[in-house]
Image 1 (cartoon, rainbow, N blue to C red):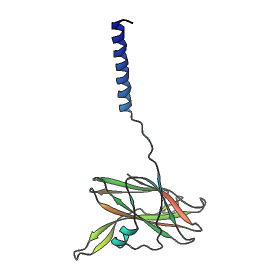
Image 2: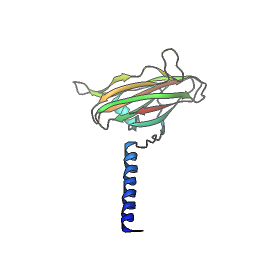
Image 3: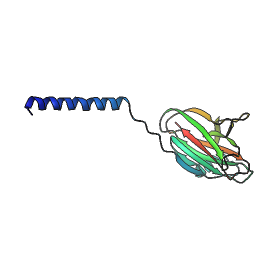
Image 4: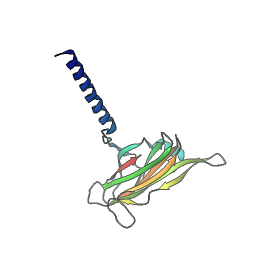
Length: 180
């Protein structure tokens, strides 16, 4: 093979490689994030004391979670997570795919977003800044299969999400929760 042909082949292969890289960069491959599964600490009643919330809340980051809240049959239960905003933006909290341990059983509930506040007297208290309305395993009455709340946050803002779930004759309620 002559010197000119060799240079021509190298230039062609270099150009082909550059084109492949350009196409790959223009159309990046997206991969679905892994769902993190967690059974939340179950509470039979909810205490919104800020110090207590810190001790029981499961810490989360933006992502896709599958939470399970165990409960006694025929009684409701609560679970709490703690979220700290990594950057300043509007965060979306979405709940979906709600079901009880027996998929034919109806499950429902709601979630509230709470924040710690300081009173003028120096006392800490928690304040509800958003609520989701009713969600359920089926669209019925006021309950919907999917609920979404969007909250604008500053960086390092700490929020608590309180989940209330209920399902008759079931030992747990499971649902997907996405923070974007």
